[in-house]
Image 1: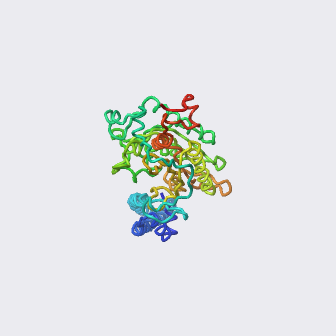
Image 2 (image 1 turned 90 degrees about the horizontal axis):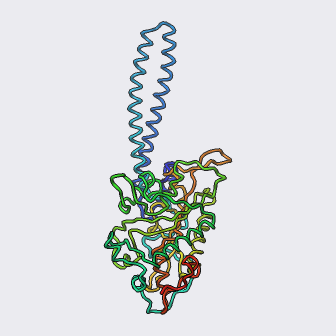
Image 3 (image 1 turned 180 degrees about the horizontal axis):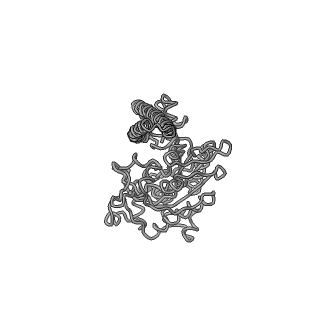
Length: 424
C-alpha cells in the first residue's frame, strides 16, 4: 500500500510511475488528496474543540471557586454541546479515514525506475540465458512421458477432484519429494530459516501481502470459517512479521517454506493448462526476506542468484526475464521471472518470480524496524521468490532428460532419489 505521505507530496510522480503499469491513477489520486484534505480539516476542528473543552474545564473550576454557579453551569452546558459535536466529528473522521483507506489500497505499487514500459509478456526483457536447449524435434511432451513411465495420473486426479489436481504415482511422487528436499536444503544452506506454516490464512493475512482485495477471485475461499487457501507460502510466512517492529540488527531476515499452493486460475485455457503447465494445486518452496531499505536491491540480486544456482544445478536451459510494467503484479516494484525450456513443447515455462515489494507490503503489514540513529520506526522492505515451483520444473526435467533408455535423473537429485540414476 502506498503511503499517504508519498501521494500527498508527489501526486504527479505517483500518476506518472503507475502509468508504467498501465494504470491510470489520475482520478484516484485526486480523490485521495480531496479525502486527505477533508480528514486534515476534521482533525483541525477536533483539535480546536478539544482545546475549547480544556479551556472551559479550567474556567468552570474557577467559576465554582468564585461562587458563580450560574455562569459555571452555563459553561458546563456549553461543554456538553461541544462534546456532542466532538462525537459527530469523531464519526466523520472514522468515515473519511475508512473511505481514504479504501481508495489507497486500490492503487498498485510504484514500479522501480528500471522497469521497462510495456503491456504484455511480449514486452518483457530477457537479461540472461543459460543451459543448452536440446536440438531434437522428436522429443515427447511431459504428459506423454508421465503416462509412459507411470509417474503422474491426470485422469485419477480428475476423478478425485477435477482438472488441475494431478496424482503423482510411485517414482513420480518420489521425484516430487526429492525436489522439495533439494530446494529446502539449498535454502537452509544459504541461511534461510525453515518454517512450516498453515496452508489457510485469514483475511488480514491476505490483505497484508496484497492478495486481498486484488486477487480475491483467484483464491479458494472457505466460506464457513472465512479463511483462504494460500496461493503461495509468501502469504503466511511474510505475515509472521505483521504488526512487528524488528531490530535493525536483525537484518537480513531470511525465511523459507515448502507448502502446497492453491490457485483457481480462472480464465486459463488451451495449451496453457495441458499437463503440468497450469494447475489448481501444486507444490512450491518459497524464499522470503525482510530487509533494510538501503539493502533490499542487493538482497534481490542475491535471491536471483540463488534461484539461478538451482536451475543451473538441475542442468535445465533457462532464461531470466525482467518484467515490463504491464506484466508485473499489483504489489511488485521489480520482478525477475525465471523460465525453463520445455523441450517437448518447444516453449518457455515460468518456474519462479523473484520480486522486491519495497515498503508496499510492509505498510499494509505495519512491519517496521527501529532506526538506531534516529530512534524512529521505519517501514522495512519485503521480498520473495519461488525457489522453486515444482510442476513446470518436473515437466522440464522429464522433457529435457528423456533418452531411449528412460529419463535420466539430474545428478544433484540422485542421492535424494535413493541412488536412482534413470527412470525406466
